[in-house]
Length: 230
Length: 230
Image 1 (cartoon, one colour):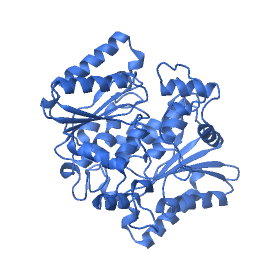
Image 2: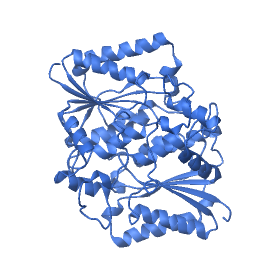
Image 3: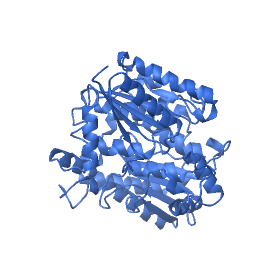
Image 4: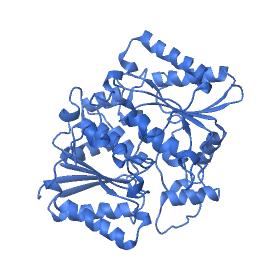
């Protein structure tokens, strides 16, 4: 609906890729609804995935022994995180909905996107004990993982060697998003777009646009172990 | 035993950290056994986690539309992967055992180590359909995930909000290592070293050294969904 803000965190090297098209479809459809859409195009930004001392501007809390989570927490509180993190914080803070668009790499997200999680979701900003899970600091936001796979749908069932696709969603949806209080919408999965016809790929893009039309009416999933492993 | 080769892939920014000590203990104990030990110290190497066009030297197979997995597969076959990947391939090829040493970040490995997986385990080198899972190209190697957590052991049970620690091992042990044919040894987990006494930390280091003494007699786990979710 008009006024809603969306951040799309997007990780693909090639604008002409199917992931690029899924991202474009989302920008287009959500803009058409009157949403304001921000995109973090991680490869285009050459986003830094490594969690290092460079994320803290100026002096360290304890220069004798570098502890990344302590140092970034302290730096967040005194406003001395590196500018790329401050930029991402602004976008996340504004957003009502976070969409993560990526190709599945090794049962997970590409390293460049994992680096976004590792570096952006700083203690103090995204969580701060006891404010985690349902009381995480990003509560009142929605999150959605939209990704493509190499294997077909049949290859990701309980009985197949890859196991149920939900098994691999646990660390991402529950361990990251739910931990920060984000309410998780059902994932959007395009299975094996490289192995289907051009026509089928177009249908997949249309289906994504269709889903986005009624996305704001969706209820979040019940993000507990039952959803993943029962 | 003498002659065995081990590669430790290590991801911590601080040599004086507990992860650094665990890495040192492993180097020391395995060397004492007569093993030859290689270490990929990812932060010290400033290892690149991003999967980009730079991983391919010279011309692309299809410069019109960049496809990372196709391009790296082709580049592997014609010997034109970037030199950092060639270096890692040599180490992996030589190794009988791969140890991954890291602090758990967001129910998974730090982005810099995920980047090692994304970039080093190239098709053609680590797997090549139908050579995956038990017939993956790295069969005859052993793999072991050794990591530290922020939370205590009691916080990672089926009944607790974090769920069983094994749930989060699925993408790493099964989705990556097993997929490449690597036989997975039981993980070595040090729970919450930052929240225990100096004495308890020393015990943890000793326990790791002890385990390594008889590591070569261990049987791999039965890396199927039962191990993780039953």
